[in-house]
Amino acid sequence: DTFAGKSRFDKWRVELYPGAFTTLRMLTTPVIESNKLIYVVQVASPLTSTDNAIDNLSFLLFVLLPLTVVITGFAGAFLAKVALNPVHEMIKTINLIKAENLKLRLTLPPSRDEIHELAVTFNEMLNRLEDSFTSQQQFMQDISHELKTPLAILKGELEVTLKRIRTSAEYTTVLESSLEEVNRIARMVENLLTLARFDTKTIALEIELLDLEDFISHVVEDIRGLALLKNIAITHIVPPGSFLKADRAQLRRLLLNLLDNAIKYTNTNGNITVKVSTDKSFTLIRVTDSGIGIPDVELPHIFDRFYRVEKSRQGSGYGLGLSISKSIVEAHKGTISALTTPDHGTSFVITLPKE
Ligand code: ADP
Image 1: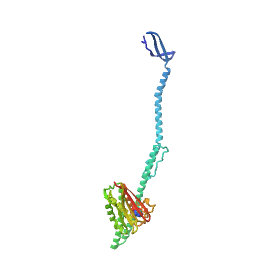
Image 2: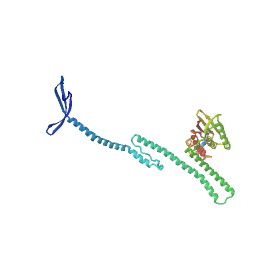
Image 3: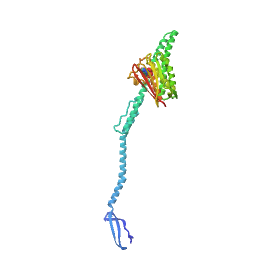
Image 4: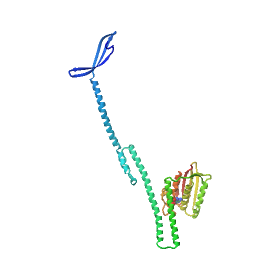
């Protein structure tokens, strides 16, 4: 009855032979028959293998695990360093890039991963920056070059005149031709300023609803005098009830630019037509002349700044007129293009969204 009829586990430390201890785990089970304890069964098993297993586990937990963590940490750091090596190279190159050496490009890492993609994207951005930088520089060079000639003429004229005393008639002639030169320069500077304002979007359009029939007939009347000097007829065809939301002053300037060119590059007795047509969402304005046309190879460049087809062409200006026209059209979210047949004429087509 010590066991109260139940089984029991015990730990038992025994000396197998002198000096060699071992721990046994022992099960004691009473065998009871008709409420009477007949006998007691005791089974014991040494705990050596379990103890060994537990010892091994603690070794694993306390020594190997931290060691693994440390090794993984170092390996991770090493791998990260290797993986980020291209990034260090990229940073070095990027630090070297300045306005003066926009030609530098990142060397693309051999791996096809995000870092490779980043390098490609960065190089593409540099391409765009270089392009716009080069065209700005080109623009500056062109401006300086274009200003140099009229200024040199002016300077020469004034210097020669000042060499000795002149009659008042001579002074008048020189002053008149100087004034002409100064006016040309002033016009050019004003055009440049307009272009710069369009570039920096500092021109605020004053949008109003224009009755195109009325508006275009006024513009045509304003320039008809110039056309008559070359006996050029200007006709305009505007369907009644054509309305357009646009900046009146800018649209006037655009049409005057195109008409001025049409007159300049059309021989005497020619004719010019301004034709308006509309569809649901666009207004098309077409300025067609029967002039000398533009050679096909020049066509892609005529809207570039300072671009002139053959500088010797009569009446050629500074090549800014069409650039300004394009800026005006683009500020109105429209497009402008030219169709031409050399020796037969040119047609400028402006497409403007109605809204
Ligand atoms: P420019 O002040 O020299 O006329 P533009 O920018 O207005 O400059 O025009 C660029 C060039 O395009 C001109 O040099 C001219 O040769 C050509 N061009 C423009 N309009 C016409 C036209 N209606 N007919 C023929 N050539 C034209």
